[in-house]
Image (cartoon, rainbow, N blue to C red; front, side, top):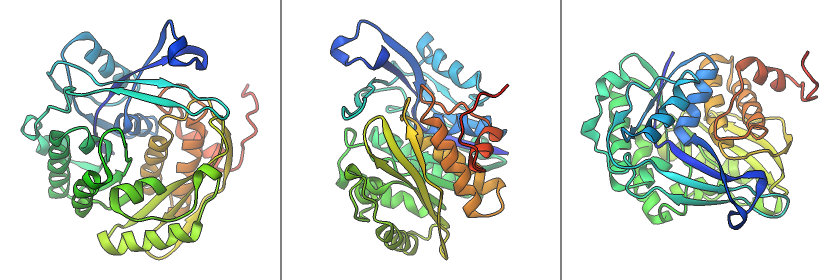
Length: 338
């Protein structure tokens, strides 16, 4: 099944052993980015996952492409050119010390790219699903134009469209986000986003305080109904993170299909690397909605997939369908598999 994602893949540099930036004499190197991470998940589940972006022709750009190819993601629609790949520095948190991100992505190849550089008809020919996030239109005015052009082309080809709202305060303001993102929602069938995303990108506030481990389920149900009525979404979904510390989180999820609300089981997670957890949820939910019997089963697959991602270093969720199904069905023992 052909599934297309569009966005920026970046070089990630992290101090080793949870060191602080000021301690670091060296960095671990991995590649990742919201929509690239989703593509990797979908390739792991057996789909024909295509990632669309623009990367420089130099060796670092090629290394980013290779990181996707070796995991089964199709890269033939990645445009080559531009001067630089985006970089982000990640300091891993621990206990009460939060993780920290520093971006170095201004004027990256994708940020300066133009819609006419992409063969949209070829990209979406025979595609079943298209996924983007709020990060891509946030990186630049051109990023917003590319995202809208992709959405228009996807709808022209009858493709289901999903979005992870993914608000990034270091990239734009809530006013800028709402101007762009509310316009893009006309093309979206499946909307994914946490409480901060819903408020800052679309203007819907659920209540609760995740920094204190407080979740307001009724608040989510209220805004999901409002979002569905406003934009006509087929599904609205969110992860429900209870941040007890940088090391330990409660993790569950919710989906609304316009009629009923489905809450997943909850997981207590000891975090190895939380980056990409939301992307793992998006990839799992897309796979679940395409293959599972109902939204509830799709949600359980997605939340199990994202729980597993928190145990894996790097941006990518390196698990297969069987592993996710095992956890979703209740085996969270972590026993050695012999």
